[in-house]
Image (cartoon, rainbow, N blue to C red; front, side, top):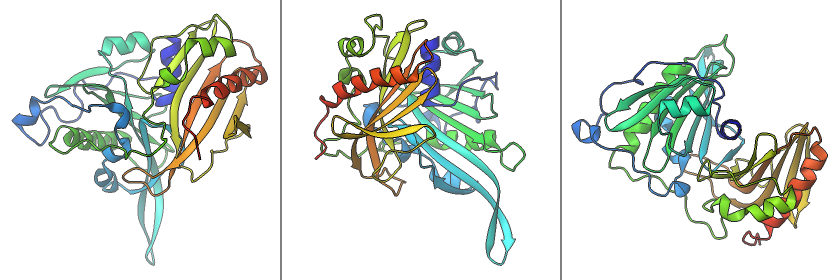
Length: 337
């Protein structure tokens, strides 16, 4: 369970979910009719999917002004901010509410029962034609909508920035979810990220990091855990410390993002950052800047993301060990020049 919870923290905001309605918005097939009602979502190679290309910009724009959220995220997620505005006169607009939207592509979930066993949460399960769907509500008021695909699961999460402001997170999640399903169940090709020379975003993290490399950097007790996603690789478990590695990208032009407590450094000649907090260390190993996805304007800076949590309140030692692992991984990456 601890491993699953760590993945949730790293990939989406589903820390506490309460039961929802048995069937997500719309109980029938998508607008494609009977033909689509028998389809399942076929994504193919999920590592190459342009998740931002699946983001229903038109549906979100009907609710408010959409803007990118400069952030760090895995290559399997897309984050957008929806500003709900009213006319303030003289041609000006006033923001009266903000919704945060995230679309994430993860490994497929087998059932609502599997979710309940893996997380301390409640999910309701339904069907959309031949597609298994789930829905729930996060502890902080966000609304989740999920749908299984052939090689993964699509997760839509919409959260209200401030509870007292305007905006309906669940209605927005329903609209976005409906639009995403209509797109992936149609004859429209799944959007793919363009191939970039020396890019690492399509690499398997479990091929970058071997159990031997992890044990050499930390302790021999850190064994390989089941691969919890095609986008991440984990080692360790309860009582032994845990390290999660994933390939990521940042919507920040040419630099790694700076969060409180972050130290800028270099590892094996590459730009890097370290963030220390209690028994936790997060290291970002920078790689190359690539073109933005379908609906973005700024380039993405690729990185390998290391998240290590120990059982000892010693982040300095944790970062020393994690930096050692990052240096070993750097030697396996394509050149950055």
